[in-house]
Image (cartoon, rainbow, N blue to C red):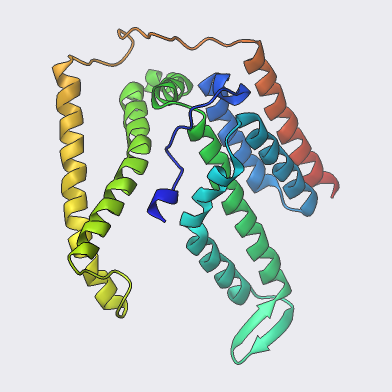
Length: 266
């Protein structure tokens, strides 16, 4: 399951989304998230689903690979659905002892499940079609106005991109450690909750040590190459808006406009 996490990975292929300016994809991801929270009816979610399916088609990333990342959050979605189904007050449809299934709870559970699923898939599209270097430049460019407030924009962008890039690396490392511990007789699935928690200690200790070692090696490598970020640093591939990027912004504006129209009219 750990290898099923696609967030932070880059899928190498040639598509319109891969050629788009990373700033468009970053702003587009935030616009899609805003659109998800603005949608409050069936029409709004249909617009969001159509937009998401269109982006998946344009990315040329296999649908199976895209949906594989949903396995990692399936448990979170199930918990969200169960809690909202039984804890939301409203018109009671089914009652078993003190547990009540309400109409409003089912509607809220469906909305949150769709939002979480769309949110993860939409965020994965950005990371799957954008390299870490492009993502760093995009974050730094979008956060550029904060420099006037003396915010270390480049350092923040670098930390965010490195953290995102470390997600699949740490997941792969966790999978290796789990297999090594299971080969020595450790069990992570048997026993009660306390036993399962204790079984995680042999997993977390080497994982933290490996994470700190990787971070230290990366810092030493950057210092050895005299890395200095900021305005004085030149870029091999500077970000330049092209015609397709302007069209991308137009698509985003149209998407938000459709979401707002569905919210007002329906």
